[in-house]
Amino acid sequence: ASLLTHNVTLTALSLSHNNFGAGGFAELVAGLEQNTSICSLMLQHNRLGNRDCELLARALQHNSSMTELSLASNRIGSDGCTALTLALQISNRTLTSLDLQSNRISVFPMEWCLDNLVLQHVNLRRNPTRTPAMHICHADDDETAIAQLSSYMKDLRIGAQRPRHIKAVIV
Image 1: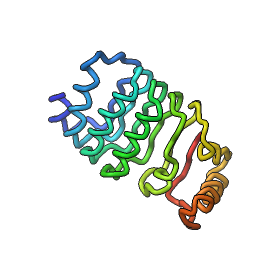
Image 2: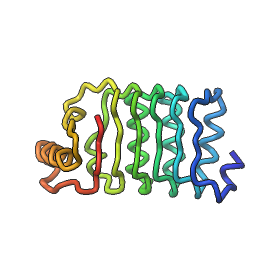
Image 3: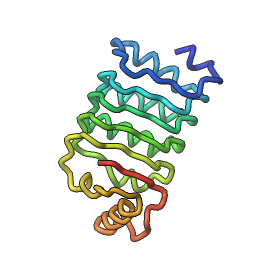
Image 4: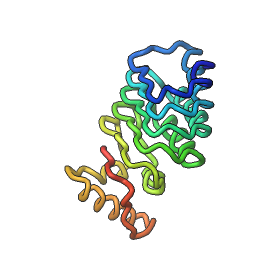
C-alpha cells in the first residue's frame, strides 16, 4: 500500500490474472486511495467479487487521477456494480473508460451512465442482463448507439438532449 501511496511516476498498473488473498486486495485499494499518478488500472481475471468492488469504490471516491478501469472477467454482481457507480457518481469525475465485461451483473444503473458527463466508454458485454435498459444499445456504430440512448432517455423522461459525451456503451 505504501508503495502506491508515495509513488508519483507510475501511470499504468496491470495486475490481471492475480489471485489476491483475503487481505491482498484491501492493501492494494488502500494504496490507490491516496495515489495521484495511476491513470490506468487493469484488474481482469482476479476473482474479484462484490465486497472487493465495494472496497475499490471507496478508494475511487478519493482518487482523482484514474481515467481507465478494467474489472473484466471477475465475479462482480449487481451489488458491486451499484457500489462502484455510486462512488463514481458522488465524487470521482475523472474515469472515462469502465470495462465490466464478463462479470455477473444483471442490473446496471443506466441512468447514472447517461448523467455522468465524463464517462465515455462502458463495456458490459457478456453479463447476465435482464433489464430492458441493458438491451437498448446493440449498434455497430457510435451514431446509432447515441440515437438509441437518446430514445431511451426520452422514454425515461430524463430529457430529450442527446448524450454526446458517451462514445460507446457495449452490452
